[in-house]
Length: 123
Figure (cartoon, rainbow, N blue to C red):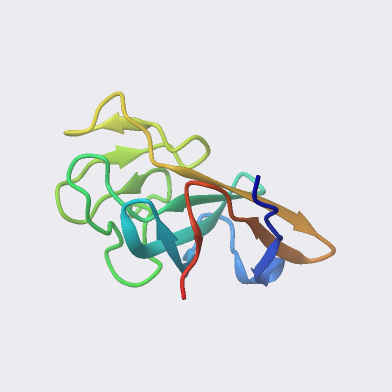
């Protein structure tokens, strides 16, 4: 069994409610890539940055994942829409699938990520 260590992602104040996400590099069974953490309804949520319709990065511009209303995560390529709190596809070509969630916690003004078998730090 591998022991994973919590890794610092950012200060809590860097994640504005329904604002720009913080991207970070990861390795996963599918290869090197990126992930992101955003704030939704007061909580930090993190996902591997890979659409479930076609495996490609989803942000419109670096860190911009939410639609204009700030309600759904939307893939910039094909418009697949995901719920920010669960990662579940709620519209578009990936219906019924979910983004791969990553375990994050906020403690003492810092957002932390616990890598696991799905994703770990790049490099």
